[in-house]
Image (cartoon, rainbow, N blue to C red; front, side, top):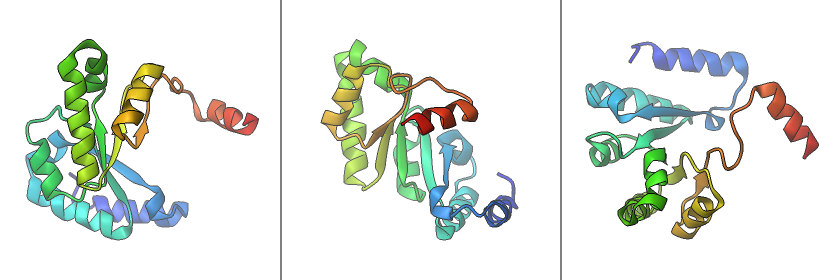
Length: 153
């Protein structure tokens, strides 16, 4: 919520040479809900630069649907707790199915967080989830190790 945040991002983009559409900034509902008007203005400015905005931990806040409607969100990241509940509770799968369907209907990219098993991965694909992240794919590693893995492939 720094007033000069957009200017800082512009400066970093210029100095790094990063193309803006390669940058995705993640926000949480709690970051924006207390000052929605300021957040909306700032996020619209970032989107105008070509930057993508993702809402992280979707569904854990108290104004998810309102935030989706009012802010220029391109990506919905389903909180890992819902992914874990897919296996544990029948209703858990229904919640994930609803979030994915809603995201698709709103033309948002949907990303599942905390995918840990092949079964979760396959269920999410079957539901139409666009992307997934989690230990099923790989545990977090330092950049140098990632580069080694990429060179091998």
